[in-house]
Image (cartoon, rainbow, N blue to C red; front, side, top):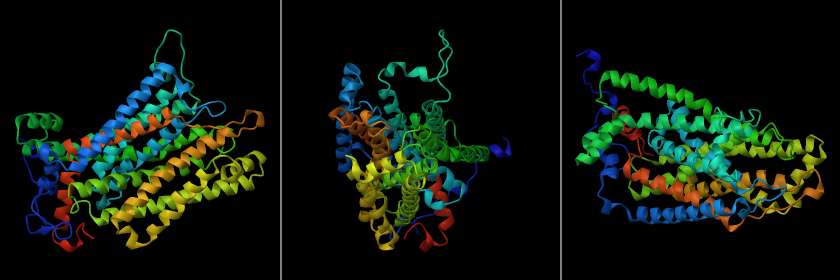
Length: 471
């Protein structure tokens, strides 16, 4: 056997022993048992809240099935879209879901490259959130086509009629940007799971689980060669994922920025959309991680330090979003364009949706300023409430950008209003059900926290238990 094929003990496999402390007041016996116990816990001992949450999510999934079936039977006329508001909830929700999917790649890739150890307890969770959010986002453009069975026309495939997609259209850029982002995120997520699959394979109590985790582990045997290749592949995927965080939502913003419509035609949209995406993504990570932390008693793994760090990132990106709002108002005035000025005046108080603008200002700018206080950042309930508020505010931001700009075009004779129907709401709520159901299943069947990375953190902090991941 070659030396590099011999089994060896890396820092990622060291067990700190029962006398080391990770969280406040928690004796740490085994990282594997702590995280793997969530997966191997008997079905009947699953927290009751998980059953209730999954049942609620499953009801929403059924609502989505009904809404989509009715959409296929009757067409997109069942939605509230009209002329001039041909883009309604479908595009609003598409941009919202894509934004939520950005925090996972940011936490996993960028913070890995920056060597931020606080990412270890939340990176796996947020990576899965990215995949599920992108899956929900991908539904809306296809459903919005009117004839979703012809969605493959968007792809440049050889065809008899030589009909090719328009490469100068940002809607086509979306197809490639989002599909690339989803593919790289999936590879990054699965690659990070391989060592943990091997751990779960060795810990599994029945043969079926061992076979499933064994196939997913792809022959991992903890050799030096495996670890060397794994680290290279993981860093390479992190490097590929990092520019995607910036590029994907920039391309999504081009759907609006390259148009000449007042309220859309602005160069600040790419960085503004990226900051908003990270903002809403971290808010969703907190919204999901805090309940799971409570239900499975993971306070010693997802500590107050993690919650405080995410709160700080959310506060920082929220300030960037506030700057974007200020620049929109300034440029509407400074440009001297009467159409741009009226679009902003209509958005603030003259139009029928003025209240949505001020609610989003309240949710995205004013309320999150409470995070300047460490007392607020160290309060789980306060952070959870602010994260929920930010999720609502960021959805309203997309609604304001899409809808209010379309309701008032250049010519007053083409003005109109948009009122979502019950089928708009049903489709939107249904995708929330899909997202939550997938998250519940992920937490139950796969390690939601990286086992080997947590062991590495334990090893490095074992000599200074008071400086470990506790508060």
